[in-house]
Image 1 (spheres, rainbow, N blue to C red):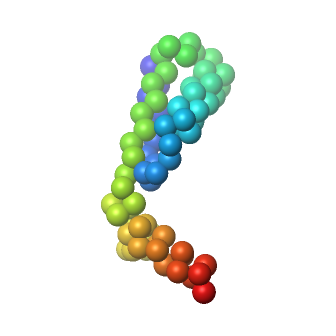
Image 2 (tube, rainbow, N blue to C red):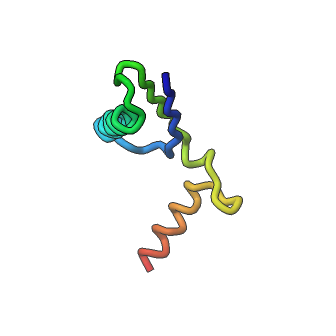
Length: 71
């Protein structure tokens, strides 16, 4: 039984996450040639303030990017 564990930054709507889980399941089923009822998908959502790029939290990077677009 494969378990597909995905970590995403929060903010996506439920319909998008459901579609993502369905498509991951489709891919695992066809690639691994296993029954879909044996496939598990887990999505872990991380707050943007708990994820950093180059030591800077993603929520701060988002604000910087928005400010640069406004200039």
